[in-house]
Amino acid sequence: MKKKLLWLGGFFILLMAVFYFFLFAGTDYYKAKLPVLNYVQNFSFTDQDGKQLTQKNVEGKVYVTEYFFTTCKGICPKMNYNMKVIYEQYKSEPDFAIISHTCMPETDSVPLMKAYAQKMEAGPNWYFVTGNKDSLYKMARESYLLDNEKNNSMNIKDQFIHTQFFALVDKEGRVRGVYDGLKNDELDKLSGNIKDLLKERKTAVFSNSTFTNNPN
Image (cartoon, helix red, strand yellow):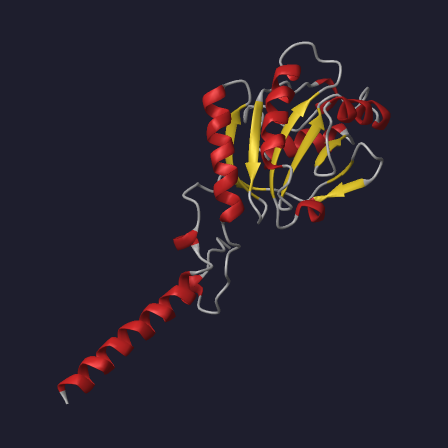
């Protein structure tokens, strides 16, 4: 009788362990400990091959994003050298991408972005995009948090974004970090966080709202 009770007790403990593993496997219990800073809005730009790039192209992927312009002689060359280091580390990962936006779409045409991409030896998962200035700047400020929040999205025609910061976005389109693209310690942190997010599972949605990670 005693052996039977011990066996039943052990079986119950094992059953509960399996239950909780599957219950929390898709939740933050198994996720990288990075805060959710913002949610990326829908977008549509044109990449260096003249193709439309939308959020669907990076759906389910971890990606890094930045803003630069092709004729920049200041911080941009150093930023993109550092971005290439990140690219070389993760270019073989099918769930990784980079989106480099121009902040001067009035001059950075598709052919210029193509030439710059070739100069950087960018592969198919590194997109250099141009488009409508209003849309580009709105994404920088309202989605990626890559510009001073005091700047607004009105009268963008005469405005100019010139920032050395990179944003890291997870598989669910959430901004999880902003990093100084000119500082080695920040780049090391970015690289480690990319590795963590690539391992991170997508949020599981349960019918019981107690177990959902959807803030809405």
